Image (cartoon, rainbow, N blue to C red; front, side, top):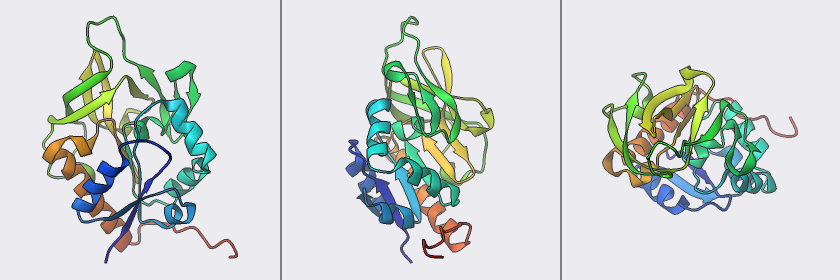
Length: 224
């Protein structure tokens, strides 16, 4: 049975390539800003490129901030990509500072610019798995290469949220975050060749397994 994956449309770029990657992996994925479609999806993806303030403003204006929080609370699988990871944290220092979704404890910080490393961090880099056995990394060797484009990095308060670690500009940061039904990548899987497509394939399988096992709490009807 097909399981629906909603890709949140909040005006960010790169959503079409995410949609193609998920559908290539066998999903029934669609880009949508329709609140009912997002609320009822079996899996949810928040992709993104651009600035934190614009991201949060666009999510807020479309009524998506509380919807994302409520969706995650149901236990259904959620995937954040690049800005979709950073938006999960409490706060970002980008643009003078902006409050984010407050789902993952921590802050988003600018890479140091005095190390000789170029900022933004752009290109291929490795992710070392901190923990084994998570569905999202199944079949992907540790220290595989993925494609990054970002000037800011996540600094989580609780290191148990870190699934994969990457080093750049003298900073070792969590490039993959995982906690309960949440997973997020700082890199772009859709730009990362076979290993990146495997991330999406694993997410699709995770959505299928979660739905079939009944491991989700569907929201009650409004008139219940």
